[in-house]
Image: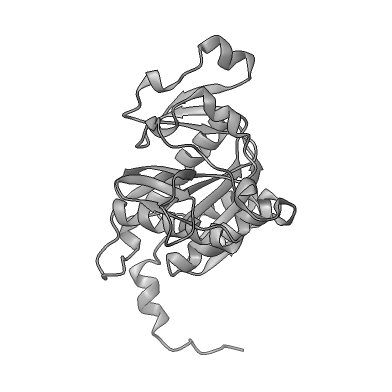
Amino acid sequence: MIEYLYLGRVPYDEALALQNELVELRRAGRIGNTLLLLEHPPVLTLGRNADRSNVLASDATLANRGVTLHHINRGGDVTYHGPGQLIGYPIFDLRSMKAASGNRLGPVDFVRLMEEALIRVCGTYGVHAGRIPGLTGVWCGPSAGESGPDRKIAAIGIHVSRGITSHGFAFNLTTNLSDFLLINPCGITDKPVASLNLEVSDPACLPALEAVAHEAARQFGMVFAEPILAVESLHAFRARAAEDTPLQPPRQVEQLAGLPDPPVRA
């Protein structure tokens, strides 16, 4: 099963701390595979192999525009996050999941499945999207049979530590695309970015970000072939994870479970 939480707008440093918390809970087996869905105030993140020259704006310009900058441990180069962009952070244990081949799911398989889920979300709203060989992410453009997709609508960058994933995807819904002029997105200089509201035939029919988040969660469940369950609140989720209950019942309890009930004494 995959559980997911929609958190609304969350400052980047708070979301990063939450990811770290959930990674440890997942590693300890206190929670199952969990998908965080949210949006951020304006922020730039630089991955492990990022080239600082791909940030085109000066520090003063970023400060004047209220854009913060974070160096993080995901793969990939520089990415922009901001209002109107759906962020997904899957905290999954890849060792608990299987690829279509029946083998354990690897990081590349995991990224491909995330791409597929977001491609399907685009399709839900009538937008043709796909992949570009050699480039991670989701791209939209002309329909099948014409020239290939060329506008990036979703960026993906993950970190995997001892089988547990963190970081994830950024999917442009109503994002102000002029903010991408601050950077060379993902280090790519020859392909523009896209936003779902500019790709749909009728932007007025595009639902709010929260509704798209629930649709993304549904597609994750379908692509990963797992039941998907919404968690009511982060507080409830943490409280359940903190319960002082053994992850596995003691062997003595397992043995007693197979014995008949003791007689009832009057």
